[in-house]
Length: 474
Image (cartoon, rainbow, N blue to C red; front, side, top):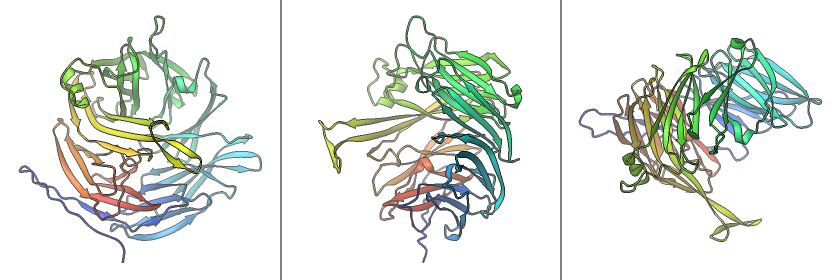
């Protein structure tokens, strides 16, 4: 008998009623797995791609989360290394590298929802290298363009733009950046739906008399004739505490949101929004808003006093509005290492430090395309864990046309309640219970969840080297 169970909650709101169904697969042993990916086949099944090092397998789960079939897929035999498993409208692509004699080859396979090979392309023979490059891959919003890149000697970039829909290499480019340090200057790499690259550099981000912080943006692709175009976006004297960029394909703009500082980078003192047209970067819309006293006091759970900013906060994501605005999502989080003088854990190599993880309140700030603030809300939560890389902390954001759902573990422990905040387009929100994991042997990793429909998500549960897939349907 498959381990399937259902939970239904009815909310007591006088305005509306809602139910959700939770369906759980039987457990899978993943002790020897390198990684796994959850894929929506858009036909009612959920696919699980498993990288087992020397073996690659796809398992399909039906609407009741029972395993419907499993299939081993074959890549090249010379110890292939998976770079990315990319869902693409029911089909999925597997990007990987392997060695052929002394050469390193970059290759892609495309599979249909039945895990049958549809097409295979060798993207590039990188040539003979003693060490394999460390590839990074970013995928476009429509899941069709892939930007694959690596860095050598600290500042020598090689970039490939590949269209997974047409299974065609669009362009490739190698370039060297002068006066560049990866840890200091690199901010983010993006690709739009046409396969154009946007590399964002964070420059001069320090408080000194002669420095003015700015973003430098490098664009390359078919839109630039495969040449590198550079433009800058000054931060008007604000230090960049944390930032996130996204490409708005609907409005053809580069969008940024994040937090800034004034005197130093110890704390964030406000938030910013930028909307940049690649065709007219000098006409960028920029807005900087300081945190107000009450907002900071509520987040830090202190009486309203002098605003000292937020010392531990990060941008988790940007939700793009159709009008060119954004919803900026931030989260209070920190990692605290306890040294051996304070306390430690004993291992085979002796004492080692313990790392405590704190993931607390989430807040959303809706910003108009003019830079004006529409609304802002604070969603309270408290999560604490130890030595788990915060795998079960933070949240998952589910998007629907009318609302956002922030879903999370109330506490990081074996028996726990899962809650959600439902936020409307006007900033109103409700908090609901979703499920209770008592005696269910579930440890849910919401940061790795996948939205499979407007009213459905699938969350992996990892516990004692066993994996379960948990489907929540509203």
